[in-house]
Image (cartoon, rainbow, N blue to C red; front, side, top):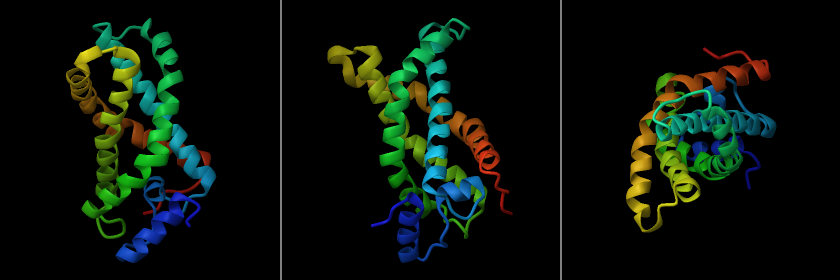
Length: 186
């Protein structure tokens, strides 16, 4: 049984004839990732996505983002960070590459396309899941759960996608390369 996401990816892609390079390594510009690197990348990505989405939702809730929203957003991170990390790291990070790499193949397609497709697929799964949790924890919808959840997804998805593709993803990949002192390939 594979011990890391990288080993799991190698096993899956070797059977499919895909060049052996994992999504995290592709994103960060390195050949492979250790468990520590995998964990660090997950924690960084989760932190920056959750803080941004909590601030965004505080702005929606308060009809505008102000400095007073920061303590509330940080307080809500107590709940959302662990949930997001577990959902992403243990579930979605296993599913998203399988789907994304059918659309854009590492080593064959442009690395920017591969990274962007991977990010889009992740957001397509994580946004509804995290909106579900947020609806349960913060919105108390009662019998109106379904419409409240759908509205939450509709409000969060554009922000999550834009934040992930243009800001969070590049920031986390940059920080990852600095922390582990690796050079970007290519």
